[in-house]
Amino acid sequence: MTTITLVGTRLATEGSEFVYHGESEACEGCPYRDQCLNLTESRRYEVVDIRDGASTLECAVHDTGVTAVEVEPAPIEANVASSSAFAGSKVSLEGACPHTECPSHEYCEPDGAEFDAEYRIDEVLGDPPHDYCMLDRDLTLVQFEPPEDA
Image (cartoon, rainbow, N blue to C red; front, side, top):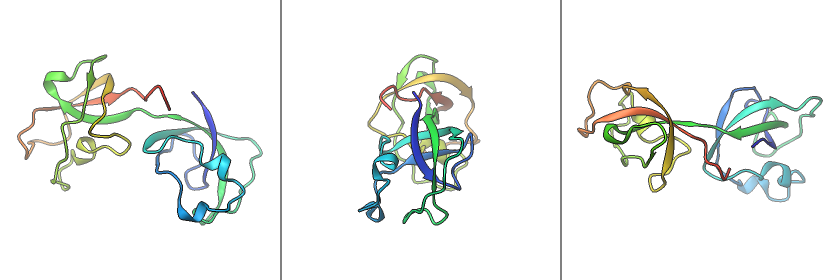
């Protein structure tokens, strides 16, 4: 489902992804609040189109202003237990990992996904980027379907 919203001009490129973190204190009193604050918090989105003829509007959060774009919920790549890594199945993330230097950390704690939620696997991508899991987890890299309630 496509939604029209305002994003910072640096994000206003087809294919760019971001996680919507909600309202900033700087948004208070802004005349464009209703157009900006219309996404689901903690959800990952992809810019699918830049609105033709959209103006750049001043913004207290984005130093180069904001512009109108169309966004859709984006899929999330994540590491899950290999025993549950089947397309169509529902899974949860394995849990937090303190090893931030690991090449898989961004997939074990993906931005836009919550540990206490279940996600449907859209596609099994294969082996994760790490050679060895320091928490001794047997993991597979998958792509979650975007949530339906976005």
